[in-house]
Image 1: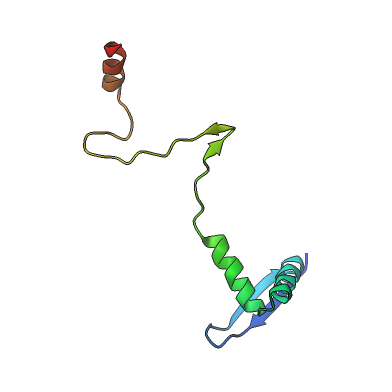
Image 2: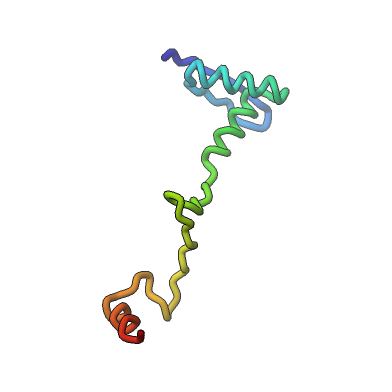
Length: 91
């Protein structure tokens, strides 16, 4: 795969050199043309979006996941054997 060196400059940003694959450059260039924005603006938006933290999945293997509980003074992160035995004996 051939890499193409990309140079861009925008007044509010710093000058940067990126080594992109020809396919990546073609896709960013096409998107920039469709949006009528500069190549650097589109590349920056895509990079920042890719680096945003993602939301945890709500379903795994078809089973809904419950949100994790926060730790408090009265509740430990994981049940210990004593708690399991006490809960079992209550039934």
